[in-house]
Image (cartoon, rainbow, N blue to C red; front, side, top):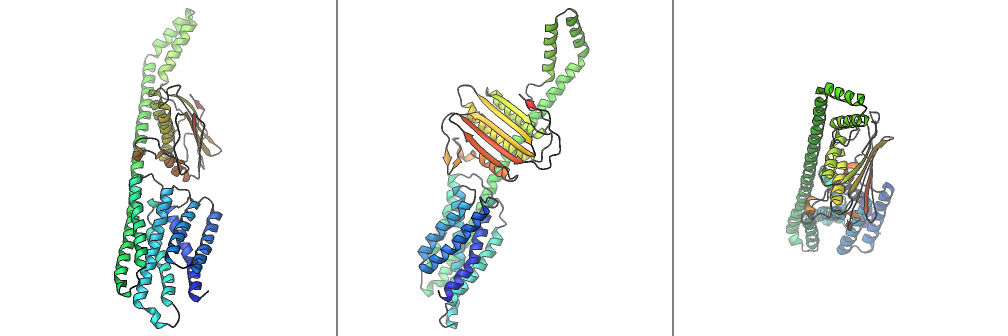
Length: 438
């Protein structure tokens, strides 16, 4: 092992950390196993060092790095589109920085100042690692890229092909060995590097636009639910006013029925009064405005489609879960259940269970379904024809429950589909309301 190989291995310790930081720009807080992640980066360091010392050819280094980068992404919960995007962006940016550094040092011709020491390559490895770390600090401010939003395949191909193309263009330019062309090569690779940086930024903006689109749809859904809940409350209050206005007449009518021994008619009269007080559209009555609103709104939608709904609700009047997140979880679960159940020809029934127990909020939605479930890379995919504007549901729930260190479990048989969600509700403020069952 010569001095150059030793410097390469030492600098590659920092280089491995840089790759780790790059990966966390894409996959923040999505690590499957911390110990396994650390072990994989140590193995990467030794593997890439052995390959470099044994072969040290550009094409071998390129292929091996791409493969090992892809293996490193297995440490993180994400879809394969995001993993492939991370691999090409990370490697394209790193190889561009290293090549630019080598060309600048070659133009300076530092080797002429030394005897028998390849100073240019040694400095190139050190300086390129420093520059790479500076680039990480700059682009780590792009927060949206950490989120995992559903984007159309065509849009993803566009943001994937550009860095992939610049990567291979950089590799081809690296094979040029004529010193007279170094300046033109430097300018070309510098432009490719800037393209990658700007496309990286545009990719972040693209994800942000999808985030805003999703939040806009959810806010619209939440507003509709609140309006529906307000109408329910107003209707209940109006019915009470009507009953209060005529209370004396009702009491006299009841007295007359009882005096005449018409007890059955009196009971029926009382039942009619109760029906007037109780609003038939108010299915959820826990006192929690956010949960009651979205449940009443969605159950009313189900009833319109002749779907029977079984609701068990055991929650306090207040939860330490943001109302927006409650709408994401309950709204998407019920949207999916209603859509699947409405396609059935036989009995249509959805079972909803919501309970707070020991500061853990448990939500379960079960519905029948027909047909086949579609999986892509171990994740359910939307069966909706308009896939571009659908398929956000389960992914939205996953991202939401991550904020509360929660879990989501999907179970299904040949004709039943069930989603269970557990999220932590720390510092609950209220005593549980009475059981609400329909």
